[in-house]
Image (cartoon, rainbow, N blue to C red; front, side, top):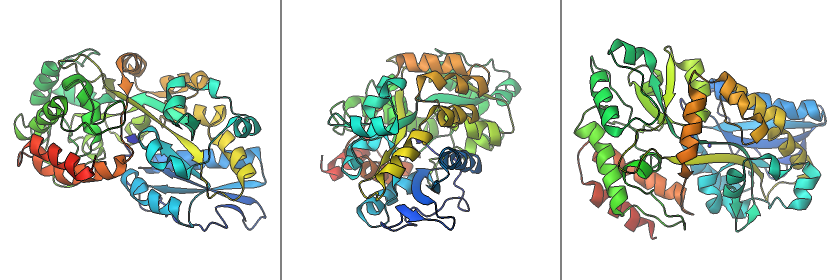
Length: 412
């Protein structure tokens, strides 16, 4: 999942263009060595993430020297804005990343992975967490094979807590405790929390603050509910009223404020452990989201990879898919901190490489977590939300009027 499911720092030099191939070369073309080329598109937000995906791509060639996987990456928000045009045109990749929140939107562009396809690829869905397997289905048809899943958690700067004379937060802490700590951590031009203008924030905090998410279980927008209005008012108040988070000036979908040491807490998922380990110059801890009126709960997401309908060499794609979602690949991603593996047998690899206390936090968050909810037009809704949320979060505008406007303009 990023997105983030949330990527962190965008690395332009390593983000290859998504539309870098034609329909004749997305799978079935050959490289200079005569190997079949399979183009694979996925999001990446840092050098470490890109290197991890490159390693997984190279595993395919190791397993089958006749196949070369060409990796194409883009930063999280760019990936989703470009993907619709790419999949509808001649530049579709053969294999593409698909997040559970966007399955319904893109389902028609992906091949159904039926029993015959899975059998040929030697992929057994029983080897994966059943919740994320189901989440990557559309109308009962499997559209992608998962590589990860995970709940949102609070990543925090242990050094900052110690310097402020604060005890480390414990799983099950409350919103009041969170605010008390955030206020003490806000000093000397640094803040206690890093806020975001992304709609993900409503699904991160909505279950514990307002008791719902930005979408219903049936896939309808839910922005005008009393719970969502309550959640956004509270969230915006962290910036405009409590002043424990910096005012937003531009897009804030990444964790640069946290990783740079300018904000002591940040909400993200297990997929960002790789960036915390490679970029933070301080000790990182993780804890559950604080409990609001509805207890300790948050959304749980996940992502996977599917074969696009434009793929011209299905057998090669099936072989590649079996490797990039296989035990070795997911075990490696777990070790790197890029994924809490969707394969249940490999999940311990993330625990072994993550920061101290991460296992108990993730398990606690999973226990009370609820599935991440979205709509068939989630990308468009998210873009509309992010464009207008900055001013509201900064205190210039009504949360209710803003949410009413986003939902009204969506046509749902």
